[in-house]
Image: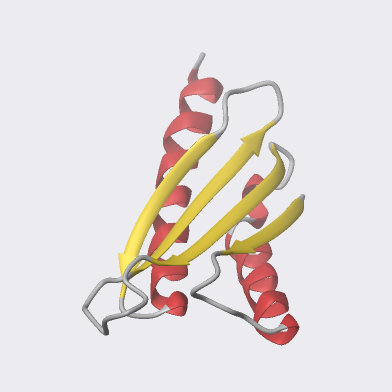
Length: 104
């Protein structure tokens, strides 16, 4: 499972933080590793000039073998919280999608 992390110009992350996200994603989504070929993470600060609430956006797109990609989005006050919420949404989406396949 390949993991790519992208940020906008308003949000910079270090290699250490990038590695942290990759490890978190790999761990949280390990039960789907046979179905997922790639995960793309898109982190952005939607309101860079203000310090408003829920201005950090994390969009996760999981590329599944032989299926359409699944994408989820979460907003939070910081990148870690946004990523954590997006991961939970993605796990739920994958559980539903993959569970339906197993039922057929």
